[in-house]
Image 1 (tube, rainbow over the protein chains, first blue to last red):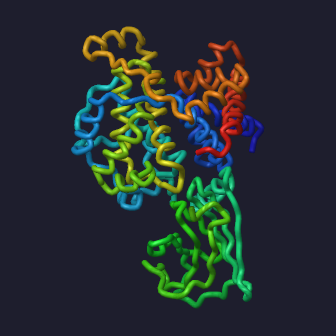
Image 2 (image 1 turned 180 degrees about the vertical axis):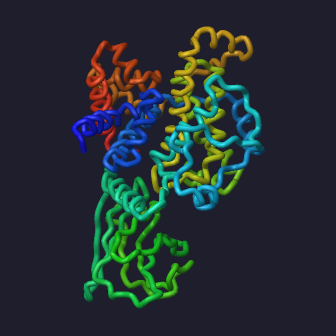
Image 3 (image 1 turned 90 degrees about the vertical axis):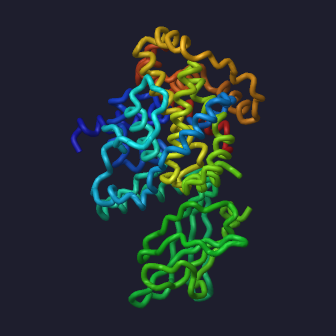
Length: 273
Length: 180
């Protein structure tokens, strides 16, 4: 890395707080976001600072004008929703994220959306910016699986996010045969990093599947382990009581088809309330 | 039901859930937009855009990445800031007067609403920042100025403003503790 680019990196890092406060002009915002896409440390930092910034909104709560409700609900009845990321065929065909996600181009036109009252700001700018916030901070479209490197980078970032959560806590357990499960979880973020140890090697065509156990509910799959790579699970609700791992056919099962090989209670990491 | 649970239902196209979600978040969204944009009619437009965007984008929300309310308010803030800047660029006063001619002012102000505990808490924590930290953070967040504009207004070097913003946010976090 040249001295010049290192200086520029340092300079870009210092923009994390202004970015979190939406205090960058459009050019700087774009430059910073390009940097953010490849900088795990910045992503974690921006995320933390953005959550701080959102707290400033606590002081501004008001009451929306009644007429706004009618307009919004009418518009909602006539507006199609965006597809969920997994169903977005166009996106999975394209190896790269559409440019508008990164704020460089307006999003595709929405021919069916009802015409709203005219805006002063070009709608495209605002929508691109909004899509970007979503992508940068909440990973809504950030599942960049264009190659393995990206997947690994994304996973490292997800793990860093869990570790950086103020309420991140760790727990682990092992049975007498030395089969263990460890978790670092954040109840506030509903996320956990789960690792396995000491399990018997699996025959071909079988995988370890992770389940979330909740009271009065069927086990919910949190994903499949890929060898000894930690699994990042998200969407854990606070009522979750434990994690369990079962051996399942390749591709996983909808519900567990065998007894758990390892289990771990989640109470000590802030769940089960 | 809380915003996070409702948003999951909204993501499946549940319009009734959206009505409930609207009841929960329209106040925070409108209040934040109104604080930044100031102009009542423009605030309504921006809030409307944000709330409709919420409906459209709900299927893409990943609950593992943060709370629904944080996501919604982050969207609202970005939209509000974009609007106030373009309004400023276009000559704020002229626009406001032009709009007033068409839309009666909405005169409900934030102060009418009962102050919540959180609001009081954040205010108290803001008071504990140094004056420069507080001004740097609030001029950016509540008034929508870029850090360059903040530096100009406070007659400070750019680097100082960036640092004050970071320190201000960090101290706010420490003061508010783990309250989500």
